[in-house]
Amino acid sequence: MNVRDSHIDPALAEDPYALQKHLGFKITGWEKDYARVELPMQDHLGNRYGIPHGGVHATLLDTAMGFAGCYTGDPAEKQLAMTLSLNVNYVGQMKGSLLICEGFRTGGGRKTFFAEARVTDDLGTLIATGTAVFRYRSR
Image (tube, rainbow, N blue to C red):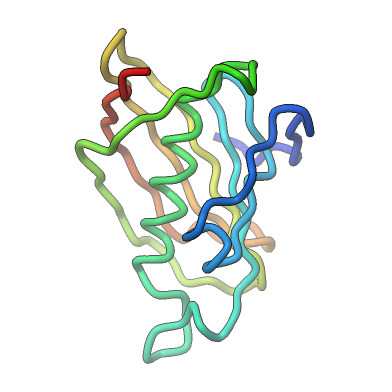
């Protein structure tokens, strides 16, 4: 998985939801089977060591993977999904100032889908990886 350039069609952008506003992350890329989330590091995201709390990484992974599986290409046809299983591997420490998470839908069917994602920083440091299983919510 290589880091892609940020891109999201403004016509497909959704308004930020409550947790997204609170943490300060943005969906900066979204297309079929792919989503990108970015979060500038801020003091309130840190743990006792002053680095991003592991829950921040997990949230970004969960969000990017969930969005990757829910792209419809039509803002009037919103698809939602619920996380059934989330696995996170913490592999490095942030050195930059921006967290970047890219998620990819890797398979699935009519009711569930599988995804993987990785969190890097703006310097290219690999920080965390994840996999997940999601269930589509009935419309």
